[in-house]
Image 1 (cartoon, rainbow, N blue to C red):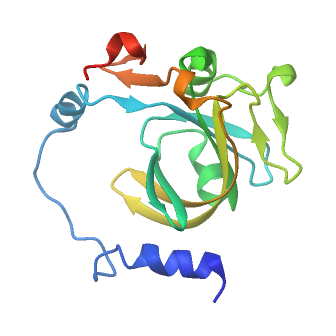
Image 2 (cartoon, rainbow, N blue to C red):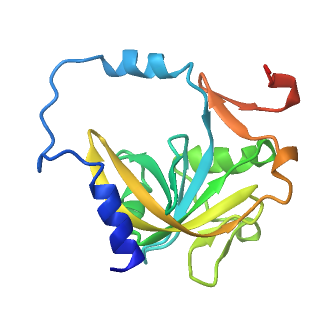
Length: 192
């Protein structure tokens, strides 16, 4: 069994036994749900892909690691994002993990209605073809192994294949999103 198939099998085991998701009635309003999560800080990532129609990018705060063996990560994208169709059909993509000094990249991916790749001096392509931003603190190239529709979003599982790692992770200040604003973490924000 190939690694991608084995990874997909492990991920499939996380799913429910139902073929179709149950209809969910009631619950919190979208506004209350968003308000509840405003106080939940999240790391910021820039996701890029090109499924053959040109490069796309979006900023996400839903990226998290799932497993180190095999190396898997998950993120979600809103159906409303102009980048969603390309990212949903891409076989591979890049997840840029942003540091505080890459706030410009976070804002670039979060701004609607612009050509995020107009400035050719800030991005390039890997030899494998994916668009990426070399200034990112770290990036992970991965193969999409599963997609799951979840409400108005799609959850995407990625098997990490290659990475640019930070030279000194201890010195980097991560970029964090909290209560509709970007923040930097560092010694000044440590509680213990």
